[in-house]
Amino acid sequence: MTKDTSNQMWGGRFAAGPDAIMEAINASIGFDQRMAAQDIAGSRAHAAMLAKAGILTDNDAEAIREGLLTVLSEIDAGTFAFSTALEDIHMNVEARLKDIIGEPAGRLHTGRSRNDQVATDFKLWVRDQLDAAESGLLALIRALLSQAEAGADWVMPGFTHLQTAQPVTWGHHMLAYVEMFGRDLTRFKDARARMNESPLGAAALAGTSFPIDRHMTAEALGFDRPAANSLDAVSDRDFALEFLAASSICAMHLSRFAEELVIWSSAQFRFVTLSDRFSTGSSIMPQKKNPDAAELIRAKVGRIFGANTALLMVMKGLPLAYSKDMQEDKEQVFDAADNLMLALAAMEGMVKDMTANRDSLEAAAGSGFSTATDLADWLVRALNMPFRDAHHVTGTLVAMAEERGCDLPDLTLEDMQSVHSAITADVFGVLGVHNSVASRMSYGGTAPTRVREQAARWREIVG
Ligand code: ARG
Image 1 (tube, rainbow, N blue to C red):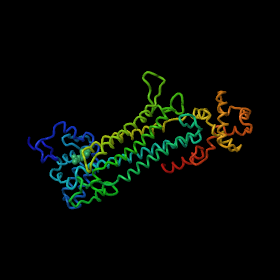
Image 2: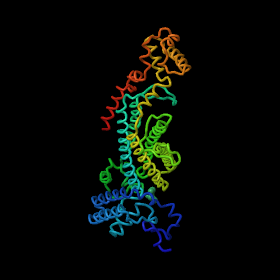
Image 3: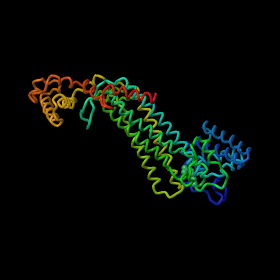
């Protein structure tokens, strides 16, 4: 074998090229080409810094800059020929740069390594996803907020154990998700602030003997500062894990809401009607309108959790610094990011388009003895009864109503007095669902007044 068959980037000491299987397991170009723009941005920042530091001539730096722009335009135009033999995006870009500008291309890799290069590219890519998740969440929060504003005083059953518990308002239920997605938003923001340190210039693992300026490249790439330890900079992927962890929690929230939409849109509940745009039909049952988007959102959480677990497993046994295992980080993150963004957009679309069926919500709100707690509270307030006794009296009245097949407000005053003689007609004032929700004025409670206050607070925040 001649040297020509070995890798042109690192083949100096190799007499033979890699086996086809070796090439197949080793190459990442099939997926890391998604980081082409980040790779070229990193190289441009590095070349400009090398010139400023006197490590590259201005002429070479200019040739590199121009050449990299050409490479980027070829990639954007879809005319770039990616090569598996060149392993990854870093070497594909550099090799093409050499075709275009010749010798100066070989000077670009001074004072850096693929280890800091890949960490930089991947951080830039993940940073964009953190921003995308934030915008996706903001859009979803706005859609939920519109629902909450429209139905601040619509009543519906609130559940615990999926059994009717107490009446709540539609707006209150929507705002519960606004709170959850609001916390997700801050998780992505926190992760972004923590990860925004530049690995570039950490080189292979130990830093470099060239007089590079890491502050300059960090600034050019929008990082807050260079990472302070070169070993850490090339070898941790906690930024990707934080993205996956925050994505997992967000996907879990999306999934819970999706589950509610599946239940609510069923013929048995009819709490909401999903739009045709976000439903599908059945090829055999003409009456069907299926909440497929909600079901798929509910399922997405599995692969996002899976990605998080997979990357934790990849990382957990690795000694410092870089190991090739870490190449397995990208596909997990790419897949999780794609699916999270899709799920956020689909949920936003569904929420924007869906109609809450006010009458069904109200009818359901009053059934299932949902105002039993209001009755017990009334006994405490009006008759100064200890709550435990009030609970017992109310339980007896619920049993009576259940036996008659009616709801609490349908019992007569005589019925009530047969259980406790001091009960007066005033009690009927608290048995209606509207009175019930209106009375829950405690901070964070379901009263329409409180819901409107919280909706206004969120509107201020998200616009
Ligand atoms: N394709 C590699 C990755 O994604 C780039 C870094 C390779 N570094 C090395 N020392 N072989 O991790």
